[in-house]
Length: 157
Image 1 (cartoon, one colour):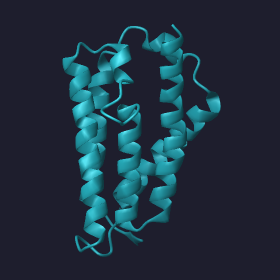
Image 2 (cartoon, helix red, strand yellow):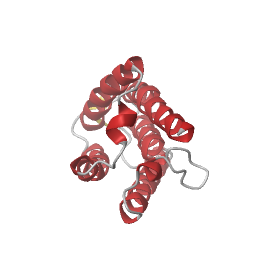
Image 3 (cartoon, one colour):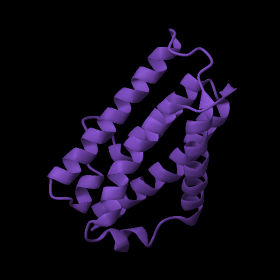
Image 4 (cartoon, one colour):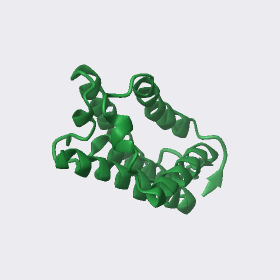
């Protein structure tokens, strides 16, 4: 684990924030209703994880740089972020329906929630930062848990 400024972490955050900013400007009908019942503990985990993951993505750098085997962790993380972008593209091109936010991407459940969490955990492994990995786990508990709750509520309709 080494402190520094991670341009790779900034790139991951940009890939995360750009579609979320677009989504926030025009949330799908029914989202406000479904989000009212979010578990407060999961919401706390999500918020704390967001802050920790965002900060750790930027302030840690990989002491080994782009050498093997560490590079493999980064490449897999990048691939997951590209799949995340594909899930958002599918959502935006599909008419921006609430149900499409939770639709699996192949075998990947709730991809808009799960892909970035795993990608940030892999970024933490590449950074060799236990703090970054723990931040991703905390984020995952909250964010994926909330999205699974939304999916359950949608299925009950």
